[in-house]
Image (cartoon, rainbow, N blue to C red; front, side, top):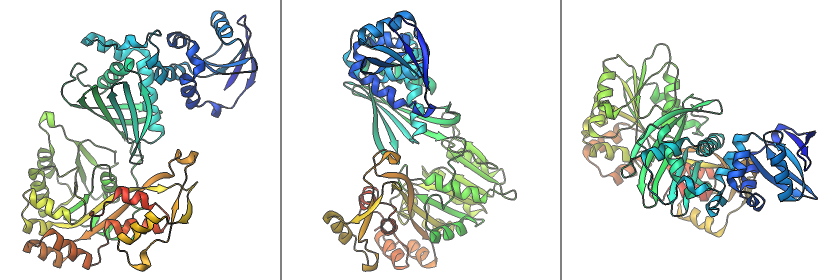
Length: 524
């Protein structure tokens, strides 16, 4: 990064070179919201791609993309009463920071309100808004930040005073930006255009998708809209389509004992295997890890997903298209005619899908799928409710892996400390054996490496149920869910909570995080 000096007459000369790592987007965003920038109309700063950064001892540092014109340099020098030093930043970064600055909501004279105002936009207006350079720049900047920070979702929420932007990192939402109402229609329209949605439709929910290249990476984006009180709210789900996120069971933090048992189940040639948990608990990632192990030249693996989240070499992957009449049941029937060995069904959503999957497992295929249940035993009840006869389920279902994702204590700032009184009460309430009760906890106060959260990264805690003859007989006999859970625990199957407390004892996560992710009733 270079700095240039300009006198009040507009001449500029290079005075020093700085290392590229000093150019930080945070510098621009902070400066765009600061009082110094308020001395100038935002429209004028955008037009000339300049942004005052600081004034000290008669020298003003200004962000710009190269040498300033005489008129711009003179205007800056007069307003700041200082000699101008230019610090080089790309013009798109400067404009994006100016567009995203929260202060714009209070500046009516700068023309920001012209983007929206209080009127109802026509279709042509919305199309024009979606292509305005400031709108495009702020959307691109937010998507780049989401990818760089490994956010899984980006939320655009229409509020009374503007558009709130939040990103979900490691399973937790964080406020990122507050855009003024002048950019609400433009930003939402831009995202809808990218996703192929109807920009004029604001009364009904919509779903779309797009593939974009961000920082050299192909990213699949799922877009969902909802009509809300103050305008539409929109959520982006970001998926790395390049497959870089496909990980092994070890990478996922699963214990060696569970890995060994689950891997043996995955090597079977027939039957049904399920991974259960709420949305965002890493179910698909676990299944992909299993498929990566089974995808060999002698095995044909076919998946049907909505959507295809990650690409796997050597695997035939089918995206469903409900609008075209190609849903999970249709896809499964078609797959069975293609001589597969292993089939992955993205989700057991309905009785028809469950029935076909069970029949496929009965006829010489290994079927893997996901289900939304709180624990492993609950999968039995859920499939029965969907209409699968218990005797068929007992004959085909071999294993259920329930999981959650807990945030890991930051390795840079995490330190061991004694339990607080509240934490000691939670330990007592967990009814753990004396030998398994944690006496201390590893927690981090927050640092630059973890964005001041105290956590960095996530890992799975699991409960693996392998159906043996005793459990099958109890299930077919019609024992209650509580009785089945008691039987499973008596046979040594560790619950989600039990695995979570192990992670606490090992210093990998905190009691606070465990209680946030796993409730008292999950897998009791």
